[in-house]
Image 1 (cartoon, one colour):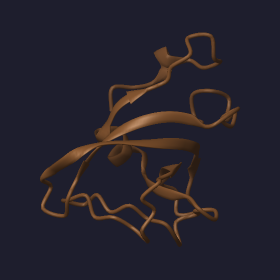
Image 2: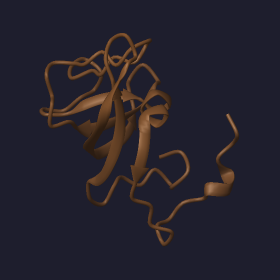
Image 3: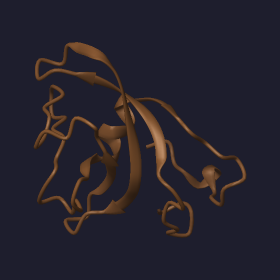
Length: 108
C-alpha cells in the first residue's frame, strides 16, 4: 500500500508459498490466495490471505507463526508480517500494467 497510492487489491491474488514445520523442515509447496495487505493497528504491515489449511494458526519454524486472530484478520483470513510472508513466496501473479512505483521500493 505504501507504493501504490494505498489502493486495495482489486481482486484476490493467487500465490504459492514454501511451507515448513515448526522445526523449519521443508514440507512442500502450498497454494494460498492473497486477500489484502494492510498495516495492523500496532504498525506492522501484514499480508492477509486465505489459507485452505486454516487450522487456528500454523508454526512454520523460527519466528514464522501464521495468525488467524487478534492481528486484524477478518473471518476466514490468516496473516503474516509482510517480510515473513515474502520470505516464503515462490510464485505470484504480477501485472506490469497495475499502478505502482516499484522504483520507489528501497533495498531494505
